[in-house]
Image (cartoon, rainbow over all chains, first blue to last red; front, side):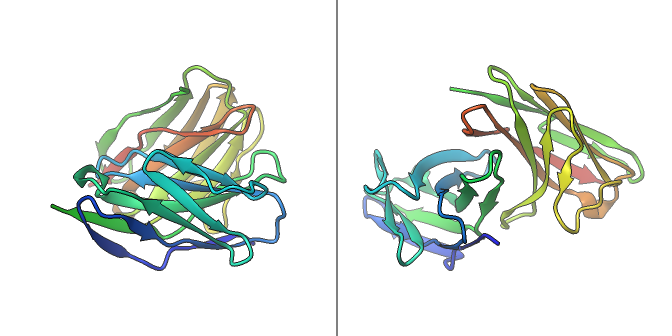
Amino acid sequence: AQKITQTQPGMFVQEKEAVTLDCTYDTSDQSYGLFWYKQPSSGEMIFLIYQGSYDEQNATEGRYSLNFQKARKSANLVISASQLGDSAMYFCAMRSLYNQGGKLIFGQGTELSVKP
Amino acid sequence: GAVVSQHPSRVICKSGTSVKIECRSLDFQATTMFWYRQFPKQSLMLMATSNEGSKATYEQGVEKDKFLINHASLTLSTLTVTSAHPEDSSFYICSASDLREKLFFGSGTQLSVL
């Protein structure tokens, strides 16, 4: 069975500083994808970044980077130069790429608050 | 980019009535659609997976007769909450997968049952 764990219910960061949101996962699949989504108070799910299990380089998208450590089964999200608009819930998720139409499983989420 | 339209965004209904939520893929064919439920400050819990033209696959603990899912075409899936009760009040969100297996989310529906 697949499982995603986010151990930080809430995080605070000062504006313009970097912050790391933790995510560990468990799966028996060899081929899987890891995702991070941002959910503001409006409820929409905003895709941030994706890392495939066979990708050798850590994924980066603008201010977002994913620190992928396959042996440790961790996929931490790093947000650089935090902005007030980054305050939101952040979810780590995983999907098996072995089965077509594999479902996306989410972690518990981390509520990030950026302080001015 | 691909868009998934979810409607309505908010609905208030009386206890005992049924509510239908629509999820449409606007510019791609959705081979698979997923329905999630989310309580405040909690994670998204997968309710069911629907494939066009076949019966939905429900997650353990989700009542099939309570949450009816229909995926009649490659662009439309519906979730009907039958005989809704206050405990069904929640945020429901759909996602759709295209032929390249990319996932797109709807904007969600906030259901309040009085």
